[in-house]
Length: 74
Image 1: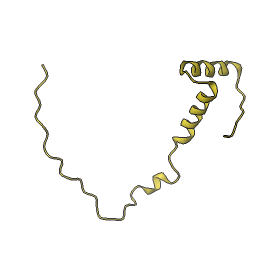
Image 2 (image 1 turned 120 degrees about the horizontal axis):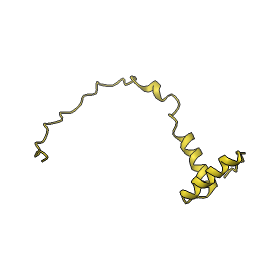
Image 3 (image 1 turned 120 degrees about the vertical axis):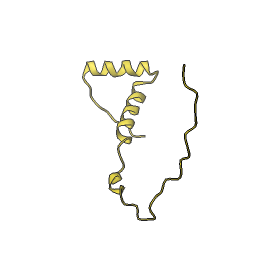
Image 4 (image 1 turned 90 degrees about the vertical axis):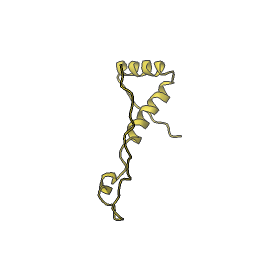
């Protein structure tokens, strides 16, 4: 697994360590989760280009039926 190094200002490093402690994680693991969340939650490349590109039969929504009758709240 690659190992990365970064430099933080003292006050920011202390805040990071405190958040990691509250999450019951090591600082390294906490920072790795933050980076993963930021990097991996991006939209895939060309994601928005697929909208409107359906070339098959028109999609039709099935009959949804009727609403159930519920008792009123008192």
